[in-house]
Figure 1 (tube, rainbow, N blue to C red):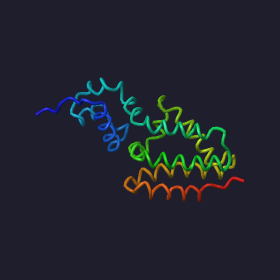
Figure 2: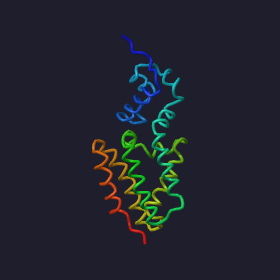
Figure 3: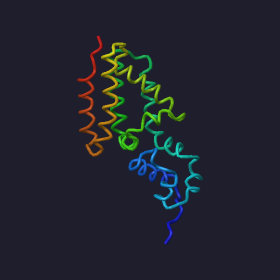
Figure 4: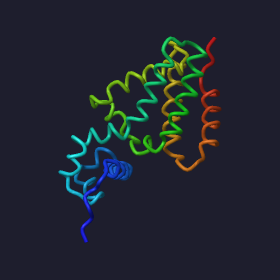
Length: 181
């Protein structure tokens, strides 16, 4: 018995997320997604203009939170910037760790796509905030390690409860960053 055409946009999104998690964004075709849903590629294209549009919609909630964090950081410096960046990014990474996990290892390539170009600029401002807006190379190195480490940790430890993961990450952030004087 043939499977019915998906009635919802969400079915295709869920299938795309599963496929991206298994074979990566680059390794997944629209045909793969259609097969996973049980529909034609044309049906997928009826709901989404292309694979990039699927990814954009999957990532939109996380990007909206990242943009809000970026707005909160505007005009902050020093220890205040570090605190807002640390808590804000840890909260974002914990909340959206499944999205982070499904794109693991593909962020540099994805940031080259026009839909995600602004995320690279936000990431640079976030690193500056983690560094307390310091120009010292050691502060910026620690900031990048913390940012990448939070994302990687959240992607790796999907099953650790939020109430355990969040305080552990915040403790690491506070230990790893250079204090701002």
